[in-house]
Amino acid sequence: MLLMCTLKNLQNSGVTKLHQLKIEFYHLIIHITIKMPTEIPDPETGGCGPELSSLLTTDFWLQKKVWVPASVLLIIGVILTVALVPPSFSYVGYNELAFKKNTISNKVDNSTVYENGRYFWGVSVEPLTFPSKYQLIAYKGNDLLIFSTIGTEFPIEADVYWKFANENVAKIFGKFGKDYDKPFTDKIKASIKNTAPKFTVDQYITNRSYIAETMLNDINTDLSEVHLHINPHKFLLKRIDFPPNIKDKFLRTAVQALENAKALLQQEVELINKETEELIEEIQANITIVNQLAKAQANAIIKSAEADASKIIQEATGDGINYLFEQLNVTNPMDRDKMFQILTILDNENDPKVLIGELGALLTVST
Image (tube, rainbow, N blue to C red; front, side, top):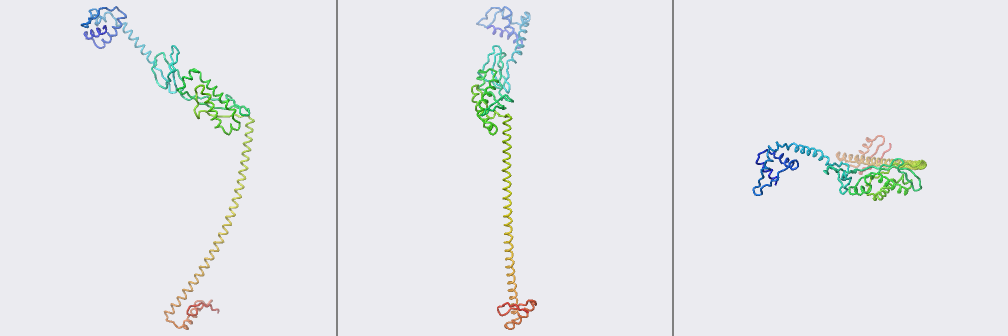
């Protein structure tokens, strides 16, 4: 009711909005700094008594100088707002997960895992962060000494990449707090050392992928106790440093293997050369046979062609002479024979040939 009386009198006084806001704030301060009148507003008219009305005039405020402590309080409020609001925001980085932690009581709220972002948690709350990206555990030099099946000790190097699963952060924090690096490192190291004696030295050289896969499976089995899991291809079995006697043994074995491979290659070369020579001889023999067959076929073709040519020439000559006799109208056999003799002599002086009879028989005449 007191605030209603204040607003009503402000409207009647005609002050500006800015003054209205100031007077409302100052009215609250009056309850603290000065004695307020106790007159109760009339419930029927809603009006206020004369003493309260006099307090709500501009002159009263200026005369009493109540604005001085009110302004101080306003400035203090602004300063506190500027000082307290920004720290109330908390930021979780792109590579982080976080719980809320009360900086006064050091109590951690692990009910919710917060990912990258900006959160308004209040001044007394800050993020308790954990890495959200892959973390590397590297075993180098003599960090990891293992034994083979025959008891030979030698160091190996390995890289293990792990990261928090959101659903397991609270469990890990509850078990180790923020000191989880050493337990993880020791657990993985112990698992590798327990798995290593299952394999021979030869397998470490010839079957590294199978060994790495077996070690990873055993590591995940052991890490289940601490709520951690290594994803496939995040365990890398790297350098294996064998003792000198093992190195010499495998060096000799490698050299012998190369010598054996060289001998096999030489045998293959000799066999290939021999087969090549046989093929060459066979090809040459085939060439000779082909040449002979081709030559014989060529001679036969030539002889056949010559015989056919001689026959054609003779037939053409006989046809020509018969045509000549017909054109000359020589029908008497005796006359025809004489003319054959003359033509024969004219045709070839060195080797005369004579056609005799009506059928044109060929007769060779020796002179």
